Image (cartoon, rainbow, N blue to C red; front, top):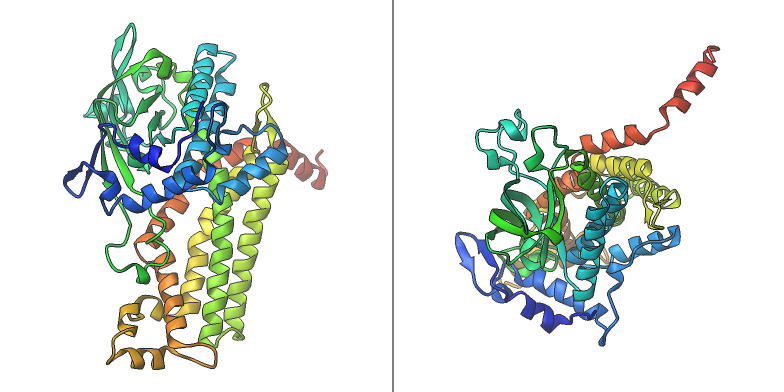
Amino acid sequence: MAMMNRSQYLASLDDGRRIFAEGDEIKDLATHPQFATAIKLVGDGYEAHYQPGADVSGPYFKIPRSREDMKGLLKDLLDWDMVTVTTSQGLLALLTAAARMRPASPEYADRIEAYFEYCRDNDLRCVQAITDAKGDRRLPPSKQDDPDAYTRIVERRADGIVIRGAKLHISSASVSHELVVMPTKNMKEGEEDYAVACAIPVNAPGVRIVNTNYAPREREEDFPVSAHHNMPEGFVILDDVFVPNERIFLAGETRHSATFAHALGLWERLGGTAHMSEYGDTLVGLAQLIAEANGTEKIHHIREKIAEMVIYTTLVRAGLEAAIANAEPSPEGWYFPNELFTNAAKHYAAADFSLMVRHLHDIGGGSIVTAPSLRDLENDEVGPFVKKYMATKDGIGGEYRTRLFHAIRDFTADAYGGWQLVTMIQSGGGLYAQRLVARKHYDMENAKGLALKLAGLA
């Protein structure tokens, strides 16, 4: 067991992985503009947690064994980089699946525990590869014109399996070490080859990752958020990839095919809700600052919108705290967040996030997207005029207000803002999935009993 520092992490990326972006294969990730920020962020995480010597591991490999442990974990999630967060959530999701599978499939549960220890002992970063290409959404996996539309087993050997397919929307895959592949949905009888879960090194033969990124291509000063916080989005191609037996967690047992997605959804939704509570506070802060800068902070409808934003972020945090306060132990003594409160909180946070952004845009005004570049403020001829007319009152200079507008645009109304609007809905599965799980875990009999009592029918 040993931890990696920044230089060791950088060296670990030079492992023959096949990475593509904008039509080219990338040979040196560390120097490519689409990956430089992400690698720096992950490297910062390695450096911040690094401890020399043997028998040490990062806090991101800690398994919660009490509600207090879970509370501490969520606090840490807000400070860690995306890849470290993904690693922690993904491995906890695997352990959740192991606990649920152990009675029927103890060999898979044992493999998952061994894999967790392998990642911890080597200080590796993992991403979860779940969403398939899906082809014609009207048809199940076994009825697709192209059978590879869903990732599947194409060959079974004595020492392992060979899989083929693609996994989409895999954030930070290119700057991580491991791909944890799992079924995207519940598989039925006749779809055994699609019920596959396993772990694959990013540099395994047959793996290629095509990347997009919302990192700004322009001057950083106009992009105060995304210039320093961006990750590549991976389109992962699995072209006849061999997986040895010890890395196989499911290979045809359809009864467990949805276990992994449900477990991952639970932890992703919990982490997503934690981040959305922080984002909600940020939206409130931006709304209040720009209202004060515009001189509109006392106007009734502005105050009402900000009040609604305050209530939104407070209720999101309340749901998050309820999910922790009602956390439940597994037979192994591992604690998992409460399903009902986690899914209800994530659904509410995601469903109303765009409304909170709309309030911010309504409060801020058109300069959110039309404010001149900060470079224009430096121009000797027009800069003084921009500063003059962007100023509003004593203490609110033109540069200050312009910077606020650029922060709002970058955070909510540009490439990064668009990425956020989509991921707030889709992270941990769409809204429908959260409604299904919330309904499943809601005490409907109690609700019906109260209604019958009220009606005099009990």
